[in-house]
Length: 68
Image (cartoon, rainbow, N blue to C red; front, top):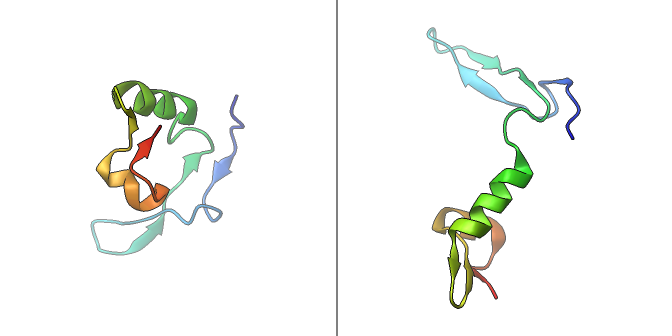
């Protein structure tokens, strides 16, 4: 379930336009990632006989490389 509200300042999402000006990006809350689906995909696609391998790009955020 997701709440659909406009999110700008809370997430501080910014981008540079064609004139190199920094602008606030607007998104609907819950629309950028379907978190349960992302977690399920990571768990399913990284299974090994020893456990679940954490993708290299996520290791700095998790602090570990394997779920046993």
